[in-house]
Image (cartoon, rainbow, N blue to C red; front, top):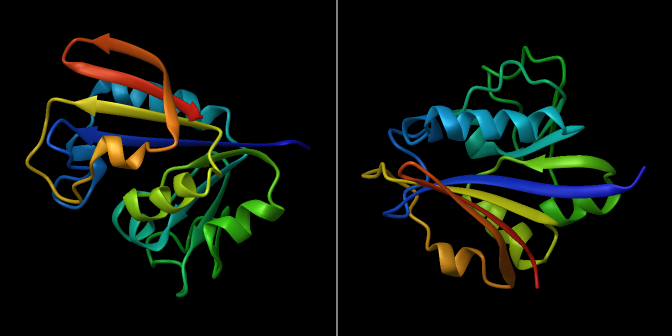
Length: 163
């Protein structure tokens, strides 16, 4: 089976990627709709330990891999599709196949993007802000080119591919 790696990230106009520790504080119904479309095509969801501890992953529509040096967080340990792996994103993706959706936060995503491991990057830019985990969109997407832009209300939906 061929490998395709896509990634999804929500960013507020001020660069926040979380509000009160979770991305849902910045999300909108349209962002959630698009997020679930990406998820519906995934064979595997890949997150880091911090995302796993702060986002709701008790159930997932497919296999969930948490890249962490610890055990699965308590709230995820009941998910029969979840497993923890202590390795780098590059090492994990080297041996993976299928449609892989990276739902990780900025740290893990930045590492995957810097090594050009992501085939398509989907970013929602929302009006909401005042959160944490600030990123610079231009810096994050260095080495990628914007291939699609759609404005819906006060949100911008971007798609990037490697240069």
